[in-house]
Length: 311
View (cartoon, rainbow, N blue to C red):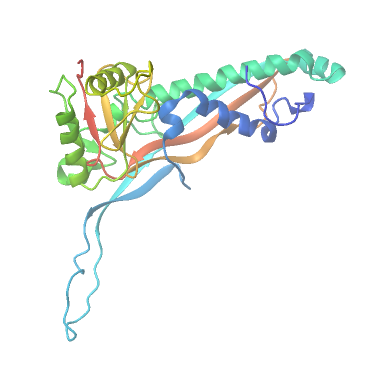
């Protein structure tokens, strides 16, 4: 069960937004790997409008003193995406609240804290799993409550994304390898080279624990043991050519995602936080978490999706 790092909770703290806000963030980040590491950026609209740079400013280069100075702009694509809405709710009986007010926080603290921990971790798991799904949809205004977009659905070479055709702009087409089945250092370096030549600078790999083990086993085969120590294996996060390999239990089997973390972010219109008091219809007190957000990419050609790795 979650233990508060601050002062002991009082019965009046049950459901108090100020008290629970840091707890919510701790719990969201404690289990969900990709969700916790994704860059966050506050936005001011549910329909998020942003731009992707598609070309350089032509008014750059050498000049003569008598040349006219004419300004220009970098080529940009206007993109738009409707964000997604999420909730998670728990309830506790009014009788328990009354009991806690008479006896100090007592059993209510344990009941509330444990339920809040469970529902927040469940929400984190739900979002983190969706972040890998083969899904790319619009949010507000849709007939159904759609999940956040997933890397499998976003990282594609063809189709339409954010109202634009991928084939019309090189920066909107991701890199996909669905033929390689064996991980090798040569193949990995080939993927990185493609991305770096396209402008990627801040790459991170997300994959399964099984594929991370495949990589470690191949690294282990090339390791030279020195001295007489009985210690073996590796310490810390594995890296290959300076790129960190992150294993996530929610990543789909046989997949590797090489993500340019400078080209994507989670647009947050409303970060996940405790919602307002609901109108009562019975002798229970319902509290809920609520957020409006989604991940977006400002360019896709600096990220890679690899499927089918088995050895």
